[in-house]
Length: 186
Image (cartoon, rainbow, N blue to C red):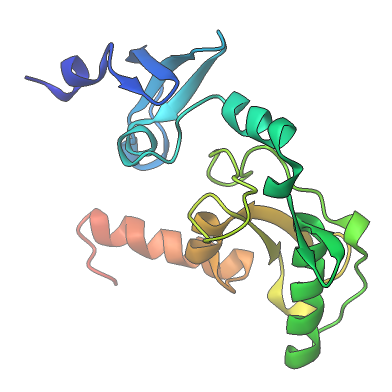
């Protein structure tokens, strides 16, 4: 049985696969049109469905957040700290240790619903860090943690990006492409 026939009609959490998307993602990644139990439709990578990193359109996370504020905050010495505050505090410490510029305030950090790099829903839960956990990233590592040089992306995207600059990432992709086309790193 083909992978297409295996996926169509299959349920992954709150999502049911309807059909293969017309356009593939980067590197030929197959994407699927899905419908969520709440009625919304979305396009999701097959791998995200199979490994369980995408189980809804985001409605589940919103329901859980509304149900329990404890999921979004934690108490430390009687002070409730938001995810944004913890990111700010950690970045401030990393900047100090690495002697990097730092001019952020907690309200400068905005956690989007989806990772701007990978397109996966960000999971703001407290506890174990996973691929979908939001992390604060420096666009240009040398500039430090300053306004207009930080964004919130998924831990998964950050693991790939690390401390590469844009030109280093472009060179990395160029070499992968060259190797996959038979150039073998020349």
